[in-house]
Image 1 (cartoon, rainbow, N blue to C red):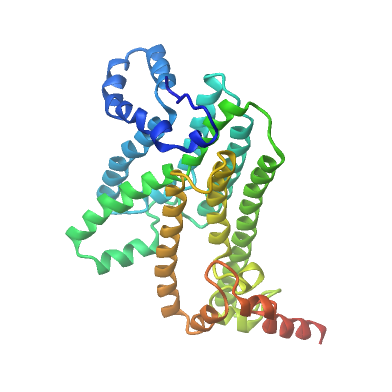
Image 2: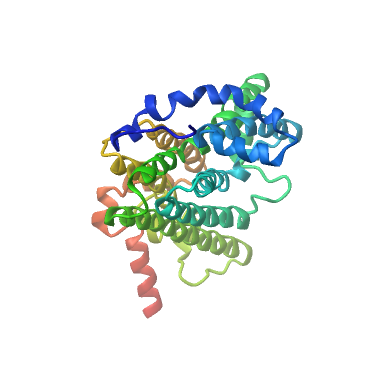
Length: 349
């Protein structure tokens, strides 16, 4: 059996019943693949007879050395970054394909995949338009870290974190989808009102992230135009552009509203799995927790760099929350409310 036989919804969230029995498949999988490599039907049968969580986890580990070799050969450590927006949806699509091929109910999984696909489209597009897929493009933070960490230690960092931990993390945020698959087997096709609310809420989080992305894109383009022509573009004041960082729109209430929405989406998927299994928490939350920790650490480092570039950023940090809107920004109508009022008065004159 490639899926566990469970008696209750709570059992669907029990690691000892839904994951542990299939761990031996992980160790046998390489030999099984080699044995069936010459037979397409054999590979298909192996795919369906292997627990889908084990298959997804195995792929995440298989990709790690690929990322490592590509990074070291090219001396470019954004290899995982280029696949960041794609891999979670590939894993989620795998769960959906496996369920369809096994004749299982897929309505919840299809809704989950719709969210994941929209998430990928938004993040891939934003990464592309910022030049992330250009040859030689690399996240500036890797270069800064290379300057701070000695060569041999940075290689270890690449092996353990950049190439391996990040690859596994992108799998682990989709682990709740496995629980959705198991629960769908028990409950059938019907989507309950809260299922619909969860699926729509996940899409809503992506839309909020897209709005924040566009606001940041508009500001950065206006800043570049201002620096080239010395003319202040419409909708912005000279004060806002000289400041160097965006504080308009959603950015007036959160220093990283796109990151807030990003994290909300994957935490929401985990909470959906808790709702379906009548549990307050379950093992699949490890991925969501890891995602939150990564965003806390990377955003802290990003802001350390940003605060060194822009003198007013420290004041922004005091008044506006990193992710969740702080009381000062919420009560005052946003960080840049005063600047917005000045701009409006200027237009009237």
